[in-house]
Length: 302
Image (cartoon, rainbow, N blue to C red; front, side, top):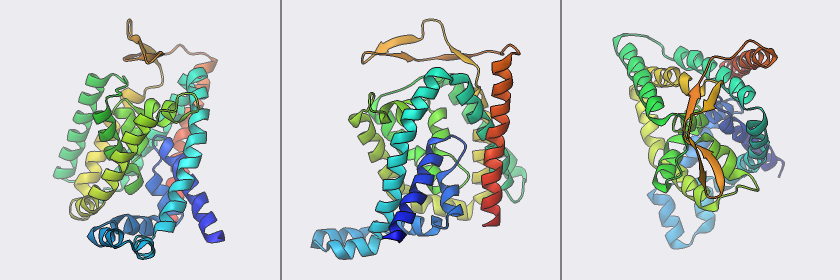
């Protein structure tokens, strides 16, 4: 029982990391020594696992897939995410600039540490970095940070967002920011007042599909094209800084009524005045950078 409780706590740590942009749940899994077992357990959901289910052999299925291990991890992650979402909703509503300042620092640090994983910055790596930067900038110009609650798009968000759990150094929440749906999926839909079972179900289905479909593909890509993949991700993060810029106001006429709630569909960046809030925001940017730095140093030692 103590073993599964420890796994539950480790899952909580991963859940917190997956909610915070710039911090990877995969990195936390590495630090807590469960990453390899987690990936191998997820990979075990294959044809053989399906045969166990068709035979009604629940014990064989649970042993083959390491089911109790996965349930402990994911239960811990889900429980803490529900709690953190309520906290973040309050913070976004009352201290939006300060929250995004901390996130901005996290993501700046991610650029350095993901880029540092590239063992050789050759021609192909530089081209991949520029391509990733261009893609992210293009998406930021198209999206402008607006939410999209189209169910198919939310399914896609689930597929790509779950990569933060499988790839150490890449934040799934960061990808959701880039896609414009971070607040909708990681904050609003998880709170008691805004709990949306339909949106969350589709997002979870996308996540499960991504886990089962791409765990093998991602492992193969990283093995064969590690430097190119990591340099692409580095450019992707770098090009997205305009989206995560802390000082943004709703664009004129961009606030609309949707399902009885006010939703901002477009944000416009501005340069802040130098005041107490700006000083505090800069401190939080530094704190965000230092947080990722500490996590990466622990990861390196591991």
